[in-house]
Length: 224
Image 1 (tube, rainbow, N blue to C red):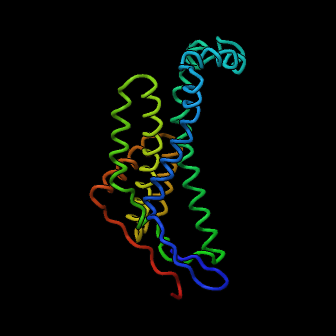
Image 2: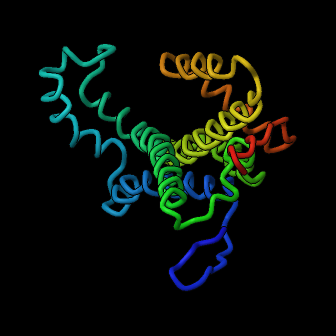
Image 3: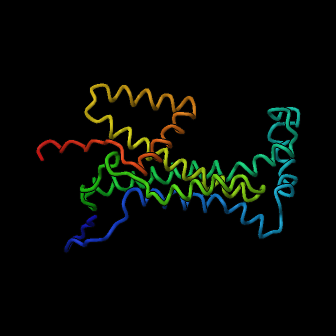
């Protein structure tokens, strides 16, 4: 990857797109685990935190009777404490990946970075080591409550990364298809309505990490 200056051109070694996405997933998981780390440093467990959050939950729902699924405020707070890191890790992976893509687009448009190596649907592939991290985190979800919260956070971030990997495979595979736009529109409409297409995309990404699937390169720009 080349970064241009006003005087000369400096060659800077860069990570592959898959490696950068793996780092995005790792950083997102670490950030999401900060609340659990703070709890541990203060000597608090999940029940202690849930007990402190229960009054705020009651106030938010304007009474314990309005809490979904007939849960008590303490039960809902306990569920939120355990689920929040994983949800934050997944959303943070999406946000950071999008910000990284947007930064690259801006850098290429402004001429700071060359346009080479910009074909994400053809090139994005998570390292195979990421599979060991994901499967290890999923296996650790069978342990105790706190290890499960940590493991589920790591699993959520890497599942999200593999979903992005799988979507890149789909984009690359459909290149040249006359109904590509309609198929992609239908896919993202399904994703907006339900979660299982993302799980399918994650499965495609995991399979592609082991056995590369067919993808097509982007056509050269007009006038190239």
